Image: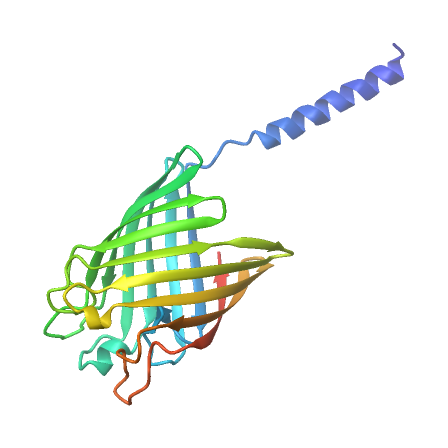
Amino acid sequence: MTFKKSAVLLSTLVLSGAAMAQAAKPEPEYTLGFNVGAVTDYKYRGISQTRLKPALQGGIDFAHKSGFYLGAWGSSIKWIKDGGGGADVEIDVYGGYKFNAGPVGMDLGVLTYNYPDHNLAISPSTQELYAAGTWGPATLKYSHSVSNLFGFANSKGSYYLDLSATFDLGSGWGITPHIGYQHVRRNSAFSYTDYSVTLTKDFGNGFSASAALVDTDSNGVYLSPGGKNLGKASVIVGVKYAF
């Protein structure tokens, strides 16, 4: 073997070794992320929380490589004040554990919805346990309240069941169809089904946007003080920056 061929072979081995070392970079112990955004209406489970008006939102997420995670998220709201209370913000705190059970990605956790300074006779703050399974693009999730649900009297044990799927359309585009059923225990008139289709676009560098068509069959039982149907069909546009 000539000196020239030996040099080329050595260079190839060095470069290949460097590439393998880079590919084998150890997984970080944890990740920490933040996000801020705005939407033309904050609808949760198909019902407007902001009287069909825009909302500012933001959150923080911590995830450990073991599968454990913690997070907090907040949004401006109007429905507490519409009900005679003082809160104008919702703060959610959650934590859980993600793992694989064969081909299914499992997610078990607890979520608390908090409304500081709400001043309502029945607290709207809510605690839920949840379990979700993801197989391919589809996710089935069950959430069970271990407290009264959002201020409904004697509603402990209410549940929400939802099915969604996320499809990658390429070039940063995605689409997510969804259907869910909210059962309000001992308040059956307020139980309903919600539907949505969300189109998303990832612009890179942390910026993304979404447009969602959202509807329910709540039949006008969720109304604003002015008589607006908070569960009516609407298109919601949002923007978000994650860092």
